[in-house]
Length: 547
Image (cartoon, rainbow, N blue to C red; front, side, top):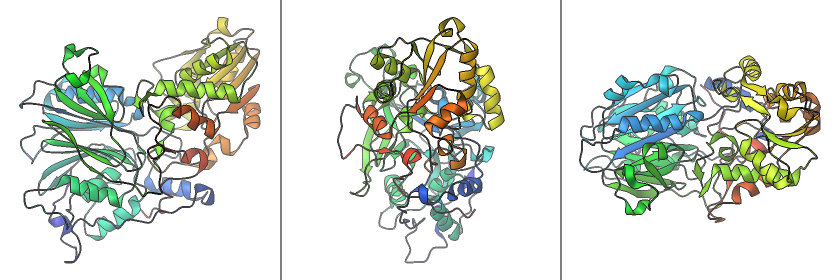
C-alpha cells in the first residue's frame, strides 16, 4: 500500500499556497475527436492500456452496518456477493477493504488478479471481518493490467488509513499528476485512483480542521479540480462517502439492507440494518437490500451507522448538461439494473422497437445474438409483428468475446461460443438483432453458422448507432482505425460479413428510446454522453499524456 502523510505531502508548498492545491482546474478543450485522429492511439499506448479492444469499465461497491458494533451482518460476504453481481463490469482484478469502524490506523485488505470467486474463498472472507467496507472489480482503462493497480487503493494519512475505489477515468489526469509530482509527492502507479487518494490527502486552506479532517470539504475540492469522469466510494474509519461527478457520467446508486422477512413491503417502513452503494442495483436483492435511489450528479453522500445523508452537491457549469454514458443502456449494465427510474431491460426493449420503426425488413423470424441483444430483439419482434425465436445456442462457459485481451482470441472464441438451432433456422429468413458492432469480427462467423444451418436470408439489425470514436471516460475504445464503422458503411459491412442487409439504430432514435420509460424527463437533469457515437465530448479532449 502506498504511504502518504497529510503534512509531509504538502511540505514543498509555498506559504501562500493552499495545502490542498493538488492541481489547478484545467480549461477543457471544446474540440471534438474528429479534429485529432492521431491523438487516440498515442494516449492509449502511453497509458499502457491494451489497445486491442473496447472493454467494460469497473464496478464499485460499499456496505455499512447500522446500530451497535460489532454487527451481526457479514459485511465482507455482502460486498463479495455485490461484486459478483458486478463481475460483468470487469474481470481482470478485484479487491475488498474492510474497517472495524473504531481504529483509524489499519484496514483489512484482500485483492489480486482474477475473478472474484477465485480470489475470495471462505478463509479470505473470514479475515475481512468488519462493520463497513468497500470493494472493486476492474478492467483496466487508465493503467496497465498489473497487481499494483488493483483496487481499492489504500493510503495512510496523518489521520489514518483512507481507502478509495473508482469507476471512470479522469479527463485531466495529466495536469493533476504533474501538480502532485511537482510537490514532491511520489506516485507508485499510473492509476487514477492513487491520484485521487493523494489529492484527498491535503486539506483546503479555507477549511478549518482543528477537530479532525473535513473529508466532505476535501472531496468537494477534488471535484472542483476534476470535472469528470468518476463514481467513487471512499472509506475512512467509520464512514463511507459515495461520490458521483457533476456530469453524472458513471452510474452509482444507493440501497437499503432490510430484514430477511421484509418481502415486497414498502422499504420506507422497515428499519435499516445497513446501507449499500453500488455501480448498479442488480446485486441488491441477492444480499437482502432494496434499491432506494441513484446518487445524483455532483452529490456527496455520507454513510454511517446512523444512516445516510447528503453532505454536499457540486454543481456543473450552467451551460453544461448532464452526460450519463448512454452505452450503459446499450451494453455495459446488467439488464435488471435501474437507471433514471427505469430498468435497463425496458430501455433495451424500446431500442428494439425504435429500430423496427427505422429499419423494417421482410422476414420469417426475429432472433438475437444472446444474451446482450435479446431484449432489443423482443422489442423489434413486438413492433414489427414478427415472431421471436431462438436461433443460436450459447455456451455459457465461454466468457464474453468482447473483453478478451487479443483479437486472435476473440476470433477463436466465436467458433466455440455459439451453436445453431438448425430446426428453427432451416428455410427461414432471419432478422438477427445485436446490441452493437465494434470490429465486426464476431458477426461474420455467426452469419456463416446460420447459413450453414439452412437460413435462406440473414438480415442484421444493430440496436445502437455505429461506434466511431474513442472514450476518455472509463471505457477502452483504443483507436478509430479498429472500429469497423470507420472503414465500411452499413451496406459495405453487410457485404463484408455476408449479410443480406445491415442497419443501425440512429443516435436520435437511441436517445428517444432510453427516454421512453423514464419516470421523469427534466431537461435540466436529462442528458447523455454520446461521444463514442458522435465525437462530441462533454468535458472536451484530455491533454496529451507525457508519462
